[in-house]
Structure formats: C-alpha cells, structure tokens
Image (tube, rainbow, N blue to C red; front, top):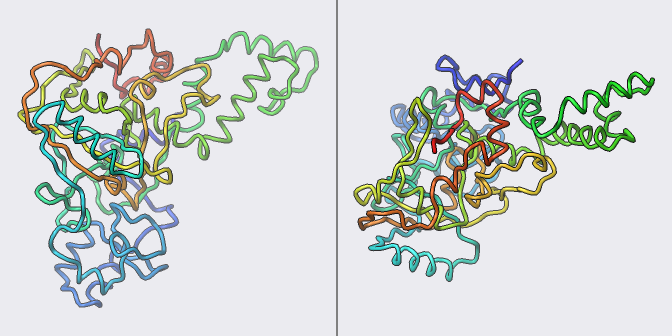
Length: 392
C-alpha cells in the first residue's frame, strides 16, 4: 500500500482540504472586505490573491506569509479596515546590488555579513521568479524586481492547479519510509534472528518487544523502528522533508545553503531532466539574469540538516551534507515564508565563461555508487519514477 503523498504527482488530484481544521470561508472573506468598504470586484481580487479572513482572530491573513496565527503584525495579518488602506508603493528594505565579478559578489556578501546580527544563508536562481497573483503584498515587493517567489515545490504544484485549497503537507507514510530506510539493514539476518527467538518461545511481536531484546542486532533494529514510527511526524519531520527536497521529490521546505560556492554553482547551471537522466548544464550567468538571494537565518522557521541523527546512521544522504543544507519551512497559510527572511539580492551583472565556484555536479550530486541513501530511495518503485537521478 503506497502513501497518499504520491497523489501530489497525479494530474487529477484536486488538493482536497475538507478535513483540515483551519480552513477559511472564502465567501465570508469577500463579504468582510465589502463590509469594510471595498468594492465587490476588488474584494474578489484580494481573496483570489490569497488574502483570507480568520473568524477566530477577526483578521485577514496573507496566506503567502502570515501563518494561521491570531496576532496582528500589520504586514501579513491585519484588520479588515487596515487592509484596504495599505500603501501602494513597495515598503520592504531588501537591498538589490549588481555584482560585476565573482570578486565583487564576495565583497557584497562580506559587507552584508559584517552588518548582520545573524548568519547569512543563500539561495540561487538562474533568473528571478515572482509570486503569480494579481494583488501583491507591498511589504514584500522588492523595488525594481517585484514580489520574489521562494515558494517550495509542493505549493507551486498546488497553485498551478488550485489557488483556493489549504491542505497541510502530507509526507511519505510509514510504510514508504520503512521500505526505504530498512535498506540500511541486513533484513535476511534480522528475519533469521527474529525467527530463532520465536522458535525458542520468546514473545516478540511488536517494535518495543524487539527493542527490548537481548540480541543486539534485533534491539538496534527495534529501536530504529520505534524512532521512525514515533518521530516521523514530530522530531524527524523536518529531516525527512529535507531528504525529499534534496532528492527531487515534492516537499514543503525550501533548501538554502550556508555555502556561497554552492549558491554560485546553482546560479550558473541549468537543471535538465531527460529520459536518460538529470543533469546540470553550465550556462554562465544566463545572459546576466542569474541571481543569488541572501537571507538571514531564523532558528524558529529553519532547520539545519541533522546528518548525525541516529535514523541516518546506516544510510548517509550525501546531497544535503555536501550542499551545506539549511531548510526553510512553510505551510498552507505561509506558502512563501522563506521570502520573509530575504535581506538582499545580488544580480550577477557580468559574463562567466567557466565554472569558477570550486565545486562540480559530481561532488554536489553524487550517484548511487557513492550515495547509499540514493540507492535505497531508488528501491522504492514510486520514488524511482520521480526523483532526480543524475547522469555521470
């Protein structure tokens, strides 16, 4: 039995949110704006753009940033009367700088780091991508660029189909994760030892029974099963989503990096997916359209990759390690939350004719000969059809 997660890959999936506890009434949202003095036409435009009413807090939430919270912050969660009085001009303080060389890029980053009270992170694009909605939030519109989109992959998929749905992200289920992560164990040996215990009259029919075994191999496997089953929706949730994201599967997290060199690589290489496999092709600065986004780290909404977590002891995923991964979270009420931590945009306003970042695709994206987790992931028939598997 496969996980409901795989519905995300179906063109017929309607992104059902009927069972969600926090689900806005869009008709009420429109009515509240009209009541506050907005025309019915404009009210429809605002609601269609993601500004929805919360009856619990009597506020409008911008679903791209606000989160399902009851507080007011004047930017992402506002009173109905305040929403119609928002400024028209961009109000954020994100700086935009043109770099004329890689030396200039490093100088800009060093200056930004010196004036920042928090660690800086990076995200790269071969060009700017903007939030696709009619009404933009002026507090997030970057002057000269627009409202930058850092929407994670699963929400981009949803918005291409439905903009009126608010489902929580559903990760792979326990059966799928077990099938993948059990690849790190000698299952035949575990089954043999388990059967020996049963034949000897020992009671061992649950994960806890196995974890309590005096057989060290069975005990280790039993504890692993308990950790996965008990933690996958809690302390392991961000870690498992990181793995989905880094291996090309839909997730609700956005991968950032602490390494400028990694950002430089992805800013100058274009992803291609062919029948023979995936690859990154060097395109320089893409006719000077490539950008590097600079973000401030936020420990409340971001997680660093926990490569030493016991759940990964048997299968070490190399992609998030080598790409120096930090992930930024999101939700159906904060689709573009990573953009809330954007502090600057570096435009690569120069030509680059060779890879000068010091890393290459083989290092950042090792194949399954080196990456045991990738090999295990490919053992799952559903994952194998959708993950990014790079050609040598």
